[in-house]
Length: 292
Image 1 (tube, rainbow, N blue to C red):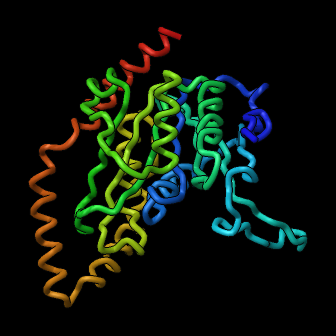
Image 2 (image 1 turned 90 degrees about the vertical axis):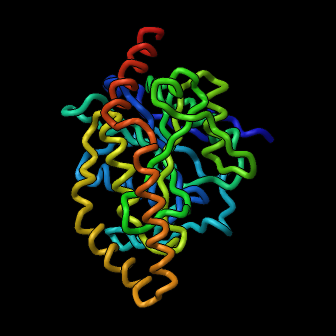
Image 3 (image 1 turned 30 degrees about the horizontal axis):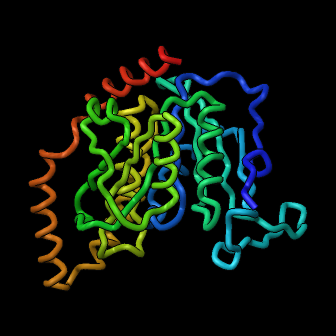
């Protein structure tokens, strides 16, 4: 039986005050979130801020619970509870920034991807989001000693021209993020996919440097504070652990040195500066608002 959107999507924004120029950010734990970099970045963004849940998606039709197992725990009153995989939409207001944000920081579903992405589309439309930004992290040939690149793509020709992005060129197995971008494109909702690299030789470690790179990029482009600088202690701690993982191995050290040379060479040929991107994005979103 087809999944009915009204039966799985619950919304709580009927009396919610209007948002300012909202953008929806999506990060889903799964295949395209190596090391939990993208989801941890959004966690860090709202660590010291009030986040209000405005919608959620019922997990039951979308998950194989033998793969994504629910968790048993004792609540504050000592009562046994079950925590199911959550896909909640939260609003975070930024009075000191250029806009408010809607965040989906959840778990990639196993089943029902068309219905799941339709739920995301319904929330974006319901809250007046003119742009959806999908965040991810992939294992790449990048050195742990450098700030990793953030690369982006979009199916929107205007955004591609303004921000110097490419249309997606990847062909092959994809995740729900790929299906989501297609759903948004078909519906005429502008979207951007941002991906940060994670050193492929340290995939099982944590990578706060990659999370900070994503947040810094978002801060410049979206005009909202992300507190990425407060990750400094975590970055230093994991830098020492990463250094220790390759220390004493001449072959590994030579490989990292080669990656450093290539990274430094590519640095000057990447995307436009964040300030240029921010100005172009503002112009694009103003045009979207005028059309609405």
